[in-house]
Image (tube, rainbow, N blue to C red; front, side, top):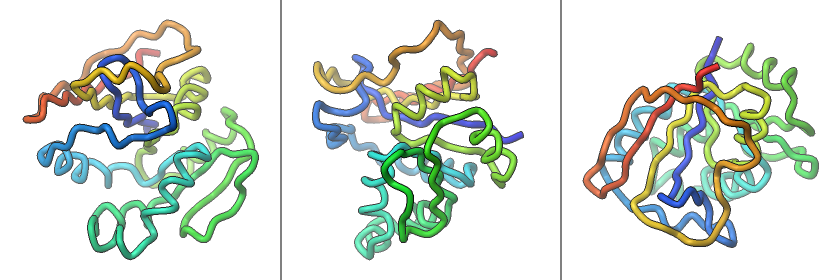
Length: 184
């Protein structure tokens, strides 16, 4: 069965979004961007929470996105997008599906129909809910070399969990990509 992989950018102090949800603090790195672009197609399906979905929906279907980042836009627009929200239930963004609640049954049904791995981009609340259900298979954490001091911590309200390091890579910017398997 397909894996569920969380991919998230995290500052050294564990913060993944600024006090107002901003992500403009990511340290740019061309080599990391190139590697991320190569890895995206491994996942055919993306899981989102409402906030991340609305942010992505506002950019990726646009002409600007297709002009500036053609390969990423093609992937984002073509992938199946499943959003968990009690308030958003439709979108004109192609291949978008909506679910009122995060449940083992819903996620299992998504896994059974996915044509590849499933990735969670951002969406901290969805990631932690799936973690609590024991449904996360891997974490790919992009550790940014800075301390934000304020913002939303990524890991919260979860039980102790053993992880196995699969791969670690340091990029020219000092950013480190850490890939972990969740030990179940």
